[in-house]
Image 1: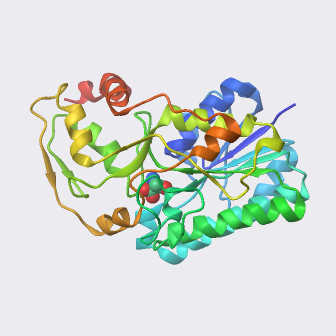
Image 2 (image 1 turned 180 degrees about the vertical axis):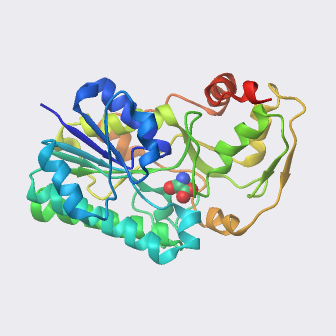
Length: 320
Ligand code: AKB
């Protein structure tokens, strides 16, 4: 029987991925964990435990007690927050991963998922359709930790046979939870301002292109990767993954038909430099070849879904 542990389940990705895993494996086989106790209310449908991934004995205890067979380790400090707290970001992003990999080896966990990011690329990487093996010189602590983490994953696979799989997520956009601490967060925040009819002040400039993805695509990519036969997984660092690429002005224009009075202003801050060091678009041909990856949502389809569902989901009308 599959027993699934999700670490960092209360975050932006975890909120939706945990639900999809519960749908696939059954609510009773999911153990959602987060370091914030308050996240418990998101997981009434499955079991929830408070866990700081840095506490290795506590993690090991859950793995043993719950007879865990798969771990999805999502807890991390993202790019923008990482620049405010560099050493804390390094400690959590590296220490957490190494705890998970060690326990996966010792307890013969069948499969591990760990997210990497487009942040592994840097100013000297190819900008357009950035290839899997493009030169990588990340200049954020988050990016450095993700690149190191990719190599640790490959090392544990090669040395110890730990079946750890990974994708380099672009910026993830959904309406079911807020983003936190990333450089791509503006593309979530903009919808909240639009539907509450407030002006949006964007921390990136109008024409900053970044790779992005609608959350449903991200969840499907993760499930597809984890379902793929082991022999198909040729990349043991992390797979490039592409959805849509757009700039702040383009997402703004996609919202205007629904909210014609919506206004935007641009006030780039320290996150502009991070965004400028990342690719504009990604070549994900390895994911297409190895596990049939294909995104389903473009910018307009994503906007249509979000503007329709966000007000009700966040109960915005009731507060106005
Ligand atoms: C961030 O902006 O830090 C993240 C990412 C691209 O990994 N969303």
